[in-house]
Image (cartoon, rainbow, N blue to C red; front, side, top):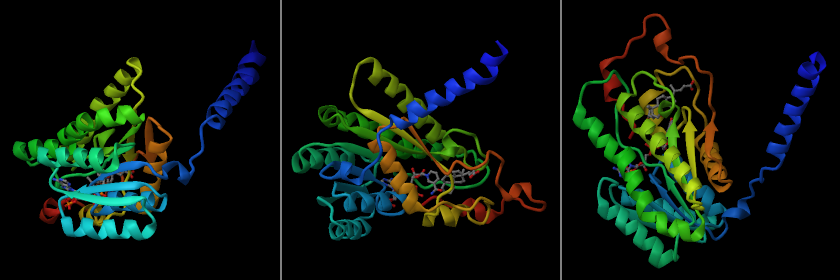
Length: 286
Ligand SMILES: NC(=O)C1=CN([C@@H]2O[C@H](COP(=O)(O)OP(=O)(O)OC[C@H]3O[C@@H](n4cnc5c(N)ncnc54)[C@H](OP(=O)(O)O)[C@@H]3O)[C@@H](O)[C@H]2O)C=CC1
Ligand SMILES: C[C@H](CCC(=O)O)[C@H]1CC[C@H]2[C@@H]3C(=O)C[C@@H]4C[C@H](O)CC[C@]4(C)[C@H]3CC[C@]12C
């Protein structure tokens, strides 16, 4: 019994872990060639970088955000990088017309959809919760309800292609960090909705994968502006982050954890003399 506990069980564990990980398919960029992908929030940051990776891999990219001029530049760069095709739809995710138009373009011009990457995020603050219920409501509309609406509209196409839904979330959507109350609430909601939906897909044999991406601090312009002065953690690069999200979605992983650092609170709060300044309240995510 002693021998069994000390040697055989750990060895068996190692063998099972080896079998599990070695049976996983490896990512190859060719897997994206010719795939039809929507990327939301693609005018800046991680979304923009995802569009460029997908373009290099030869995917057909359909990018969206509110700022048309920036999207136009992203589309041009995607074409130069070798995208199968590159298109844009500009508009706010608060507006159902944007969702409708995206789905229509995918249906009529791309002939369907293989991957839906939900990445956009509304403007918020990085400070103590200010009690503004209207802001929480607005952020829920952008960061959560529009993700649900896009999923519902795109689902028929994704069912036809056996495609994938990729949902970009945050460590703040798994753990309650201070100064991110409204934002964190919207990201927790995503986990509840999509983790539950994944279970239903499994029960109903719906061949559409759902990948939830749990990101730490990433060096996008907006995140740096909002939090770089406050956080002790050094941010991870947006280019690598974007690639890891695409890999996870392509391999149909349930979750992607990117640079999940230590659980210790990495805020200057832990440093003597630090407290949130009035300027912090003006720091926004975009
Ligand atoms: N950067 C980080 O440290 C972390 C980021 N994340 C997550 O990663 C994702 C990307 O973050 P990041 O790249 O930093 O974000 P950015 O602020 O750089 O980009 C946000 C994107 O969303 C678009 N957007 C904002 N509001 C709306 C709206 N109402 N309708 C449509 N599009 C909108 C913006 O474009 P436009 O203004 O033109 O509409 C922009 O393209 C987000 O989901 C975020 O929560 C998670 C953890 C950490
Ligand atoms: C504090 C967290 C990092 C913990 C660690 O050990 O690394 C951060 C993890 C995710 C961050 C937030 C996020 O999800 C995006 C927002 C982006 C903004 O523009 C800046 C504020 C954020 C709320 C950002 C703040 C730090 C994290 C919670």
